[in-house]
Amino acid sequence: MKIIFATGNQNKVRECHEILDGLGLSVISQKEAGLAPEVEENGTTFEENAMIKAKAVAGLAPEAIVIADDSGLEIDALNKEPGIYSARYMGEDTSYDIKNRNLLDRLKGVEEDKRTARFVCAIAVVMPGGESFTCTGTIEGYIGDEPMGENGFGYDPIFYVQPQGVSTAALSPEEKNAISHRGKAMRKMREELAKRLGEKA
Ligand code: ITT
Image 1 (cartoon, protein in one colour):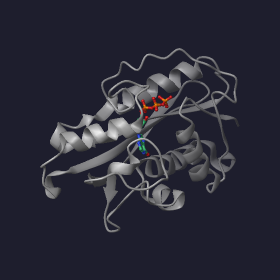
Image 2: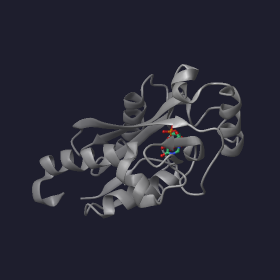
Image 3: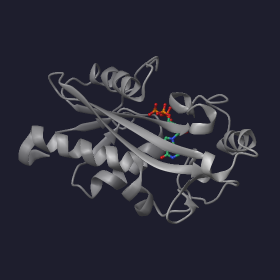
Image 4: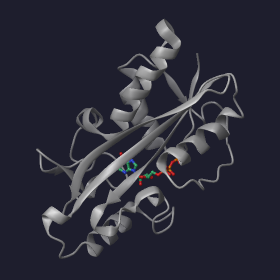
């Protein structure tokens, strides 16, 4: 059974492979499937936006299992910004060096115990025949004072976790995937797929 990942974000594709390969599931990206859907992410929650992306690709590939990921960073002291607008924050084409620096500037003077934040991930799944469901995962952390680390992508350099006290960009891919919002949501998704597909999953 073919599983297509409805995303244009290559970092998500890489992490998805790292997470699901170990679980015996193989996934191809929408690009590898030759699909380029038109999607307007006009939902108001991570789950809604994930489902919008999954359904857009499922409409083009009705015989496949289609999954999509909508995710983002919620910073409590900024009213949960950038939230569902994480990719669009300061413009899609603005570099993450600039976005991360901007968020650190906005948090200047905010004490460590008020810098709490979380990554959220919603994975939407559309089965052949149209049944659909979502799985979510979160990871709690805090925004550090400075960017740290070279791994990961996006907001990883400013998102710190305990007990290590380092950013998720300073963790190895395996360490990040073991605790991340995406790792948690994808492992739940794998279980849900196994229930539906039995031995095939
Ligand atoms: P697709 O919609 O094509 O999947 P996208 O990057 O636009 O790709 P989202 O709308 O879900 O995806 O935005 C997610 C953004 O949240 C992402 O671009 C990062 O800025 C941030 N983000 C999500 N997961 C992250 C992670 O594990 N580490 C760092 N930043 C993350």
